[in-house]
Amino acid sequence: MDYQDYNDYELISYAYESSEEARNILLKKYEPLIATIVSRMLPSCQHIGLEKSDLMQEGFIGLNHAIDYFNEQKDNSFYTYAKTCIERRLISVIVSAKRLKHKALNDSISLDVEEEDTSFDKILKDTSANPEEIIMDALVTEKLIERIRLKLTDFEWQVFELMLGSFSYREIATLLEKDKKQVDNAIQRIKAKVKEQLKEDI
Image 1 (tube, one colour):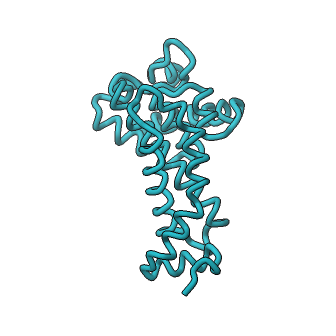
Image 2 (tube, rainbow, N blue to C red):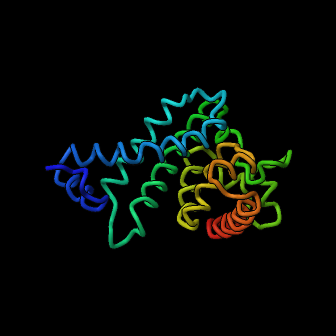
């Protein structure tokens, strides 16, 4: 059977049935997309121990996830879904690598990456919440972040995750292929949702 003659949806169906040939055709077909996304994100990976080959490998993991979990009835198109899965995987890997290097999550949670004093309590000082009491240790912080995540859209979560990794507005805009205004608007929405969550936790 010549799988080259089939479209993405047919190839995905065959991949579900454990056809390695169909999966490999999809991986080869979408390799240029991975390379394009990696090239966009690579400049933000300087000094955190990630090479282009590392990002390409992670991109293929994201693509394999897209092949395994794509739902034709739920998702708009495989291309869009695959692009999202690849970007999410790469962002998570980049943020994790930067956290390991700088231990940003253990030091503070920044919501205004361009301001000098951006600790969580400074950002939220106009609320009745006391961040020192809410964020007592790393475990509590993790649980808080997971609750916040439930309130955020996919885009807002990507922005929030990158902020936790201490990326600047400009870097976030580049990584997500958005302009700074879109990033700024997302951050304003995130702030409001974080404040709302903190009030609920009191």
